[in-house]
Image 1 (tube, rainbow, N blue to C red):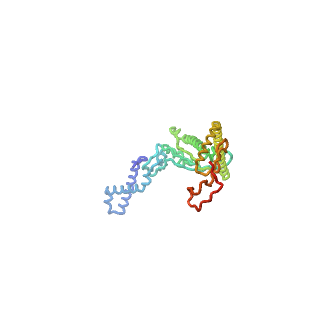
Image 2 (image 1 turned 90 degrees about the vertical axis):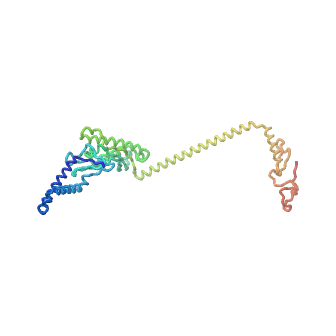
Image 3 (image 1 turned 180 degrees about the vertical axis):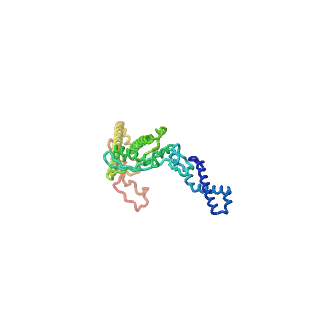
Length: 359
């Protein structure tokens, strides 16, 4: 266990022993007067020593919470001496147990980063009153906490930091509109706030430390790590107007995207049509009449070879090609007796007399 002794601990022990001896002598005088039979015991040095130690132990138990002060993890202590110079500024007392005189005081400070939130009302550049919730993250400079305790006090947050934050917010917000603070320029406002408050704190600390020795000049008492705008409250009408404007902006972007897609589709169709036209022009220029006639003859031969019922008129087509008629007719030219699909002679339809097949 780390035990820090605040001062001359030997003096404290000596004072306790003297007090115990005085009380023990008074007790023995009382016993000698009212209890004569105990005279011999009273004169015994062992008895006196036992009484003295008992009284000393009683005093120690009664003052244990005042003498033994615990400094937890993440804390430091600042000693104030009632006799001997007031605030002890040489160094703070770190984690562990600190032994102090009963008449002295040890004040505990947190050495960790802490956060605090404050509400500030400000006027924007258009004269609109808004409310901002500002969160600051800070910590005291550990080695300078005794000076902070002596010159500012335990309420250094409310005495030093918060007033500078409120002043900076009012000054900087007046350069922006409500929409800018509420929207996309919030980070810019935060950065300006942090820089401004840091400068103002340095000036304030310089003024405070002027009354101390020159070795403390230029040092910081409080470290301000960051500032955040948690919330911006504007009037309801302004809030609704900002939301409506944002909705319209995104709707406009949607329509612009639709137009862009339509333009791309039109360009695609135009390119496709141009390709088809170029293909037709190329093909039509490379096919001769003789080639087309030959392909027609091949198609006629293939149709004539098929099993479907048809009427072929030779020489009746354009350019002397056969003319194919009734290619999808359902009437068969074969006799009913040789029709392979006939299953029942009774159900066979009578043959049309006019059906002929020419070859």
